[in-house]
Length: 247
Ligand code: ADP
Ligand code: MG
Image (cartoon, rainbow, N blue to C red; front, side, top):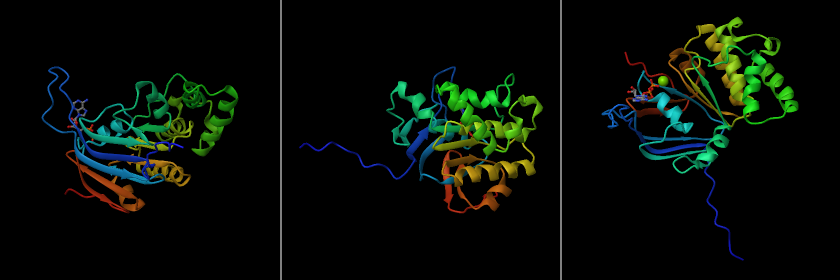
């Protein structure tokens, strides 16, 4: 019997090999002089918690967008959850993204919808039945500590609560990976701690979590893996690392 061709599954949920990203100038179409990322190699195992730190403009958001396949690299390869993102077919991208939750600094909630609807929306996009939605939305709202707030509109919530709604929305479809791009950038220190603890708890339940942050106190005390970007280059990658103080 002919043996089926099989490729060995990667032990990594995220793998960047020699990734360079150069943006094109939108008006001239010419490559910009600066590399947003340059020769980046990164491997993340399922279940890891990783901080990504670095000054403004160092390439953190570019990395997040590459992982979501919102951008493609100028050079190099990216593999996420077994998908080769240079060769993924266009019609497969929505299914790919369904397994990644994303949280932004500015929450990006639907302001005319209540908490329940903001979270249910993510389930409707992937055509979950009303029965499933009625089960999953309250469960995820309880998980982020918002069980009692399901009827509230975003403007009646604090910043920390709004970010919890965004986290619930990112989690409701049970993603394998949660990407957070400066999730606490608009929040005060106490709330920042609560949100980071929530992300740690989500990670402990099995989700791979990547968090871009500027918050040195948090990074230093949480003792997680820390990747530091500088001008598009990974300058350090440490288990239980700290924030490199530039000053
Ligand atoms: P960070 O998130 O660390 O602040 P970014 O990934 O947003 O950094 O940006 C990295 C570099 O790429 C910066 O020099 C930025 O100006 C540039 N850049 C980001 N987005 C674009 C874009 N859409 N077009 C051109 N240049 C960009
Ligand atoms: Mg950014």
